[in-house]
Length: 469
Image (cartoon, rainbow, N blue to C red; front, side, top):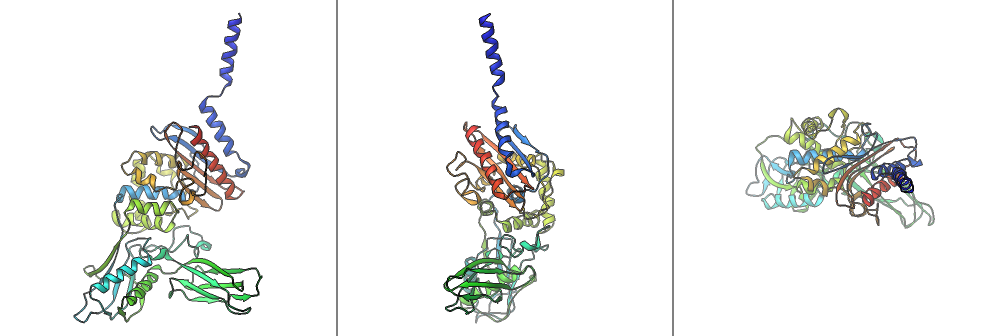
């Protein structure tokens, strides 16, 4: 009887001990039940990558705003349809070459191919190529052609009060400096002096400056912005003597901006340009190539997009999908060629509403299940390493460089962040203690507390996975 009683007690004790699966659910539920998320909704799922088995789910089929987790879909489709070695080309063309005296008659065209990373230095090198081709004088102007993307300049559902901020530049197939300028406002030498404004790149955006210098010790209060529908900068406010303020602003008509910067680069190379810089569709398809620039290969380009969460690059790539593989460089054409790919991965397309390519739009809706299915499916593809390496790494780089440092998730979690007012998301991969790889998605919407509470919960969630799976 004593042995039987002990065996019964042992059996009852085993029943009372939660299994590993039960503990996982309990611990993750506890994290997601944080008071800071009360009143909102969380869609979450964790799946083992090797076989897709779901270990944890909360509202996995609820459609929620992904914010920049939308870029995971853009990156996956770009790899599938374009390949990891694909490059974007920007070129310079003219109707004909220079004569014996170096005179090129007519306009010169800078034609964009959708490279959102085109820099001022890149345009400088292209200007050198033009000069090396023997051009000494251009009787026309510089045409900036960004019309490969005809449906700009903004994504569907972008909010008007975001449009002068650097994360929401106008979308064009021809961009330089990502369609933004840097602005510095410096106080004058004496109280009452006008503040000075320096814009880089210079020579494009006029400035309406009413900022003034105040006595030493005065609190700085400066506003720097471009009205969303205007082609000029506004600078207002006050600065103490010795003070300065910095900001960025988007430009209107990025193709004309690029043409302006390129015209300046040509002049620095000793090329006389008699006409102005302007934006238009280039004429003719058989024009003479004078210079060109190739972007980074797509595998590296995606890292420039995902790690800092670059919206312009995502919007451009989505339109390039349409230009290269569909009916043209529009958002809709990109969607038409990407949709069959997502369906081939087993995603339920009826749950996906993809309104833009970057996640700026509040009209995007996905499910946590669709995100984890995408992540699991990408692992089985030959281009998975490029996809995985493009993502921010916890405690190391990108938008996760200051998160989860000193925890089991640091250097381990590769995941895409996503932030909008009232939305905070994190989806990606985590390697467990046993070496197995897991996909996870956390889509958090409509929480009343600030985004910091959501990020704390996301970090705790992924740290627990890294430490206990």
